[in-house]
Length: 558
Image: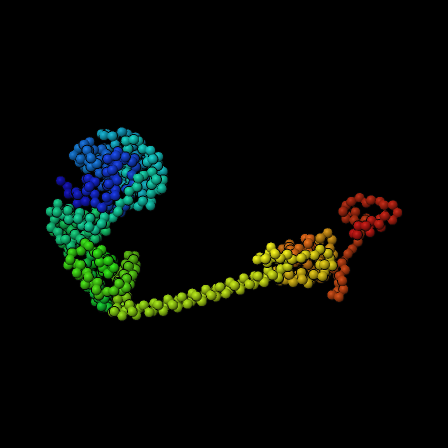
């Protein structure tokens, strides 16, 4: 018979055998007991935590012929077929290799068929997040309303990649990483049943390295058993995993505590010569120093240690203060992150060890005392600088507000925002004498708004006022200022100022005039006769009797 890997040979066949997922197994058992099994489930969580195992146990419980309770019997033909993987009622689909829309269309066609035996047919889609968007869309309707005999179980390690439309149609179960004690207990049980000779410390190393994944732990156990011919020792496990002995970690920690940089660099050189993975060593050293820090903070957290290990850990932790360990861990975690992608991991690790062994990180008893005053001094200087900048900013803001307020006060007709209901500026009737009287004030108001418009306006003089239109005269040779004042934007500014002085709104027009500074301007005017006007506008001339042509010329002031 072909050899089965330990994780396949000792795969749990009952809900009670699944470890570390009590919140899931109990929910499924209650659903089976009350006949409230959903039509679609989503099992998600880290690798090796029991997603596929739970799916198969649930499938066996649904099709078992002799199930008297919530657990499958594992003896009937349906249970045995599922265990061996030949059941026609349980279809397993690997979405990583069957991820297209055609594969899902095939599933939609086959799911209509009734089960071969029993009354349920279960579809297990593993790594469902690998399906394409089109395949997910094709699965939606089937997932929402499958045939009464069908149950779909989706499994994934990356639920964030599953569309929300799929998630909303499933009952979601999140599998957690398995705790250290549960992993260790399961490894001891499997090792005993497989007749392995093991060291307890070796199993602890495997349990820690598995990081909550039972399948990873059983694979490491299987490899260690093959390496040592069913004898599993700490040395063998370290060689398989590429890790180092506990004594090496303790020696490096001692070098950091005593500022022995040369000793730390020699340890790295020895490990490099032996072919050890320095990234794994850095990770193990960080984990070891973390345990020392936890011992300072909460020593009862290390409950998986033996009395001898606790004594050694307490002795090692006494060489460090909490602050020193915190600083060293900051340095090493940053180095570990950089080593992952670096082509020179040895250099990065050596730099981290040198930096961690400096007095400000792991020096003598006065190290923390020398650091804290320096930090306090820098913090004080920073606070003073922030206060100064804040004061300058407030002063600048206040000056801007005052400047804006002064500008608003210079505008006639502008009401004070605080007293706008109480202050009403008096306005005069719009007349040419009134404009001439207030013209200096008008120029001053325009100047406060726009110096440029004030310059153009000051070159002209108000000469006529007809139908609320103020005619402004400019010298004949000053076409530039006249043209600038004729720009709509500039005229609007002057018109708004005039409206603030007088009761009626006023429009502005510009004319050319010949005058000296000491004389009143006289317009450049030209008169044409009726005959000339008719020619100009292509109109028929009206004949007047007597001297009426001359009277018409006077009337229309051409």
